[in-house]
Image 1 (cartoon, rainbow, N blue to C red):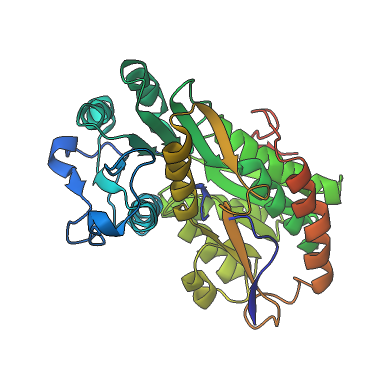
Image 2: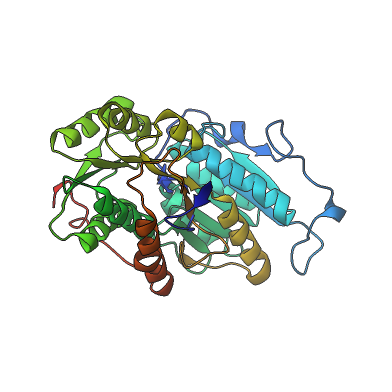
Length: 374
């Protein structure tokens, strides 16, 4: 019987939000003017009639929500997560929605301004790379709600940076790995060293592992391109050579390279879809589904109720109504390794979930998350 375990946090990602796909830039040549699409395009859900959907609070007009994507809306990864979340907003709030895909870095600011000038109430940039341009546009359109997914600090009064708390799921990965390892050596493969999200993710992974065993070795490897399968594979092989028997990837397409190495060498890892379970059932301790839909809906509903807001907001164990991600686990060990015991599951609830529900915010430095062994 499959169940939600090692947490109900929800997310994919991924990565990291998040994070999977922590908002890396995609310099595709197509311009926003070429890619802006209404919600009733062939790939989107049909827009409900106005009388069948909620109206904006205090107004008969629908809230208008726009989304900017650095890549393709059907990339089966980070950008598609954003597109699907936008469709959830349309379905659950009745908002009028539109999106632009393959927005090049140089075109971001103009695309944001164009949507604001057209009267869109909420403009979402699906990735941290949008933050600087959102802050610039926010000064000129004070009544518009600007949102950066996987953002950093945002800006008052109307630029909101939103993320799944990376320190919560990073800590979770480290805690679980420390309870599973037999060599007392665990590894992490990711990218963008020094970026605040990665500092919190990798730093908390180390913290979670050390909370179980202070003498355990944690080895972090950063690669230049999170989408490069070959680089990811090479990094995983280096961790295997160092003696790691649990390796956690937080990558885009490069994720597959790490899972491949783990499958070939009997190393425990984590997945992010049921397809990963089918591919490597003996290696996956859990698979983590990132779902931005509930968070997008929550963001838009809060705007409809309260107007614009700024600063930073994080989803996690402390926001059960809009969770950040879900760890999926098979309690009968039909596919996940028998190493994941009921005892571990029980302790996870008290030592991780309950801890963060009570005290949700943490912060880690570049030194905490530095590459190499600690």
